Image (cartoon, rainbow, N blue to C red; front, side, top):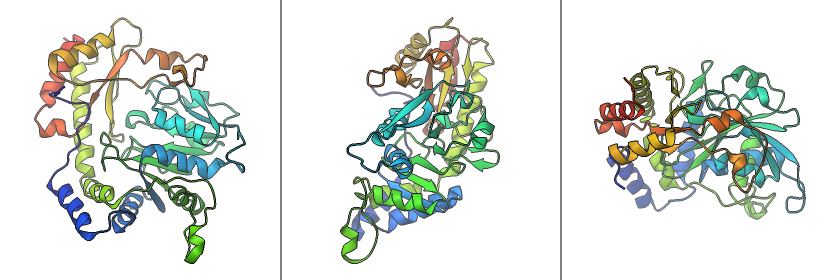
Length: 367
């Protein structure tokens, strides 16, 4: 279907086309200078010492988890690693824990639809703090005080800040994503950022078959489990151009979120993403907590009658078949009565912000 307002639409133009053409003309399209440059500029933007590019945010999560918990006998042993993750998120957060032979410990949500840090268990070996919708958890202070190692999934939170620092700079390492619906895009792509040289070295080897970086024949020796997950120079070339536009994209997303929020007019039936000077919205979420409004019907009406594409809020992962956990997640369950609309800068480029806000307020019955 051709949506008037799709839920995600990257802004790509002549600059990105030229950047890709230049790489093609160079004859070096993989493991070249553009990847190294992109890594350096992302590290500088976040104030991190090291950045390691890979083919997706999912792989970035795998790599940094493996750097902490790789089993000695990877093919045979179950490492028993419990890692705290939010109950509602993408499988790109939880599935990598299975890769390290671990177990996701799904934690209920707070009212920002982030992990409720107060409910993290003593037996968890790490926290994978996932900044859903570009937001930090309500009790971020508890995350900073945690004695459990903290990794950050900042895949949808590039540019967001808390306590005067960018998200992705608080934990041992953080993952980023450059998928088409993210703040900046390479089409596909991811990155691990860290200040820990050992983690950076391990992750760089992990995304290159576990191969050690060295001279002569030793470089063909495989020191540990790894996979082929490198970023290409074609992707990095696009990413570099997009990174140059990042503040424009941040400002646009904040403007769109503020406008949607204003259109809801504080209607007590709805809770929604609260615009912040510090946080960059990914999608704008709207939830009816008490079930008095059927939000699935509202979502369907937005799509059918107004051409505004929507998404459901993140699913309750412990309920999907291959996890099948039966603990209670009351906030996560209640959050399912909601939906998402886009905050992508293309909405402003096409002059559709007023139409989006009017459509949302009309469907929700705002007066």
